[in-house]
Each structure stands twice: as structure tokens, then as C-alpha cells.
Picture 1 (tube, rainbow, N blue to C red):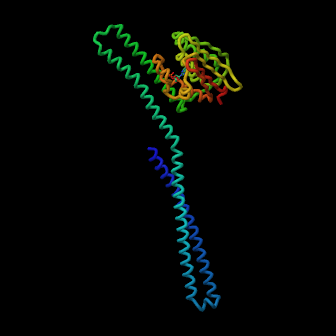
Picture 2 (picture 1 turned 30 degrees about the vertical axis):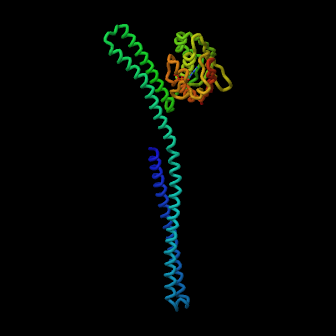
Length: 343
Ligand code: ADP
């Protein structure tokens, strides 16, 4: 598809270039031949005046005619040479602009090709991720429907587990929507001065029930500091890191969130005493739908592998950076640096 578009674009480039070049050549051709004709007429006039004055020409009128026809032949030959030269120049322009046009068309289309490929992969990945829980949900409902003697409490259990799956699907769809919003860069984000300690508290409130359920202690060490940021996305980022830290930490473990600063940046550090991430997997954890082996195998840890890819996009729109340090079986820490001023 892109090959065809590239050839089409090249043809359009060539048509425009050749149209300009042909018009230009025609103008040059008529200017040069006009000048040559005027020169020829001036020479002819001069010869005729000389014919009247010089006895040499007067005696030989045929010589004058011969000279005249010779000049006329030279004029025609000169015109042909000019036409040939212009034709060769145009052929050269055609050859050079074909190559340059093809190259430029490729360069122009490349970013579009990359975006389209990315979109295709995104749709394929998203459909795949949506299909798995949907199939599971469908199976549970079908099995329940086939069951003839189902008690009320059994039916309730099926409904509860289906509702859990639907909740999971809802969060997947919400994450996918957020991801497209950050991806296309079309979310009109507004930035305002925010107190990080307030956002940390809000994020904590959202994760506290899960931490309580898992018996994981969360320690907050965050003083009041003002950062220019987008409220919703920054809070979403804190929730993602806290949620992961709790999710991947076993019972009795501890999660610490601390904020500090250097000259220009706010630094947020989220540390846990969880399962850790292997060195080989660290470079991939920010990829969409990526889940490290140990979290996949632990099927009780819910997730779709979208949290960190959302977090990195949020960090990107805030022109920040993130570092990961982890030891398998000991714990992980994420250090996020966000400039105090967005602009
Ligand atoms: P998920 O929904 O699987 O949590 P994320 O994108 O948030 O997706 O994280 C990607 C993967 O990175 C996780 O599946 C997990 O393997 C790993 N990971 C993220 N945070 C932690 C953490 N604090 N401790 C251990 N592993 C983590």
C-alpha cells in the first residue's frame, strides 16, 4: 500500500517539476531563437546596405543571396541545437528528479507509515487482550446456563465472578482509552501548580483498601511541594506505581513513597519489598501489554500490562524521566523526576 502511495507521490512530484521545467524551457527557447532571428535580420539589413555601397556586392548579387541562405541555414541549425540542448537538460532533470522524488516521497510517507503500523499493532493487541477475558466470561455464563439445578447462592457466585470479569474489562477499556489519549498527544492537557503531597494522599486513598487486604504497609514521606502538572494524569501515575508496588509485594511487605527535590525537579520515589524484576525484563516493562514472567505465572496478580506504559506517557508529557532499580526477590524502586515548571 505504501509502495503504491510512494510511486503515486513521486509521479505527482515529477508532473509538477516537469511542468515547471517545460514551461521554463519553452520560454528560454523562444527567447534565444527570437534573439537569433533578430540577429539574423540585423545582419541581413547590414548586408543589403553594404550591397548598395560596395561595388563588390553590387557586381555579384548571387553571392549576397548565397550568404543570406547560409546564414538562414546556420540559424535553423542553431535553433535545433538549442532545442536539443534544452531537451537533454529536461531529460537530465527528469532523471534526477525521479530519484530525488522517490527518495523524498519515501521520507514524507515514513512517519505516516510508522503511525499506521503502530495503530494496527495497537488494535491487534487490544483485540487480543479483550478476547481472552471475554471468552472466559462467556464460558462461565454458558456453563451456568447449562446447569439445570442451580441454587440461588450458586447463581450469585457466578454473577459475582462475572461482575469481577466485567470490572476487569472495564478497567482494560479505560486504560486503552487513556493510552490513545496520551499516544496521539491530542489530549488537551492543562497544567497548573499542584501540591504533590495532596496528590500523594489522594492516590494513597485509592490504594489503601488493596494494601489493607494484602496486609502490605504503605509509608508516605511527602512534604508540601508545588509542581506544575496535569492533575488527573499525575494522580493516575502515582496510583499506577503505588498499585504495582502493592500488587507485586507479598503479605507483610512494605511500600514507601517519598518525595524530594533537586534544583529544578521534583523527585518521586516508590520503593517496595516485593518480588522484584529480573534484569532481562526491566527494559520491557514499559512496553504495552508486557507482563514479566513472574507476574504472569502468579495468576492471582491481576493486570493487563498497561499500567507502566501509561505511566511512561504521563512522565513524557510532563517532560520528566524515570529510573528503575530492582533485585529479584528483594524489591523494586521507581524514581521519577519531574521538572517543577512544565514550560
Ligand atoms: P500490570 O498490569 O501487569 O501490572 P504494568 O504495565 O503496570 O502492568 O507492569 C508491567 C510489568 O512490570 C508487570 O506485569 C510486572 O511484571 C512488572 N512490574 C511493575 N511494577 C512492578 C513492581 N513494583 N514489582 C515487580 N514487578 C513489577
